[in-house]
Length: 236
Ligand SMILES: NC(=O)C1=CN([C@@H]2O[C@H](COP(=O)(O)OP(=O)(O)OC[C@H]3O[C@@H](n4cnc5c(N)ncnc54)[C@H](OP(=O)(O)O)[C@@H]3O)[C@@H](O)[C@H]2O)C=CC1
Ligand SMILES: Nc1nc2c(c(=O)[nH]1)N=C([C@H](O)[C@@H](O)CO)CN2
Image (cartoon, rainbow, N blue to C red; front, side, top):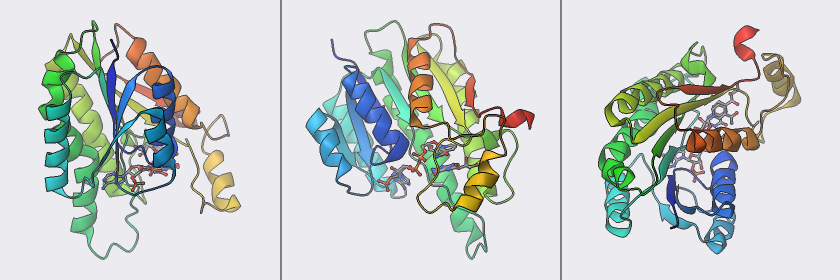
């Protein structure tokens, strides 16, 4: 029986990697995207079911939920990967920044989890999973991304609440990366400074995220926890 996994934000980088490799491992992946990219055609060719959804538009989120409830009777897992890394810098509109951060990192996962819990319960496996991809900054905050960090901390709080509420059938955990992948516009000076913040001075890479996801899917005893893939940054 094919097991279905919903992943948000599959259009690039970590989300694209997770959708590709979990599909190759035999899962049926439902992927959401916001921006049309050539890589999405590769996912479609693999059999990933794609849904376009901008989570900043509530009606699109509500439509996504309705479409999934109409098309699927069960889910093996939900992976909340979609994210915007907005800086606080010269915040012309601070209310908009914090509202956007809370929308993508807390309100959307909350609404999707609430609505799709019955599909997770319906899953034939002994366990189902909700995985929230948070961030190392949940424990420390961020001078330059305070709204982002607060919203990721809210997401981890949802991990704790949903873990308690949905046990034992549904496990709920966070994955908290630090320096996973640089962005194309990161210059060498930024990269050197960022790498020095950890004990293991290299990018973790998207494969680390997949390993963490696979551990959580395979676990029969971990819930309400956070897998911190941070290169030892907390000890520097
Ligand atoms: N990269 C890193 O070093 C780190 C990453 N993380 C976390 O890991 C996860 C993956 O990181 P990474 O791949 O770098 O993330 P990216 O920022 O590269 O991609 C995030 C994805 O989220 C989607 N997204 C953003 N805003 C919206 C929205 N309003 N509606 C729908 N989709 C949206 C984007 O969609 P689209 O492109 O289609 O617009 C994109 O596909 C994220 O949760 C991130 O916060 C945490 C710590 C470090
Ligand atoms: N949605 C995103 N979140 C984050 C990103 C990113 O590119 N997209 N990048 C980081 C940084 O790598 C940071 O961890 C460096 O210290 C954080 N979150």
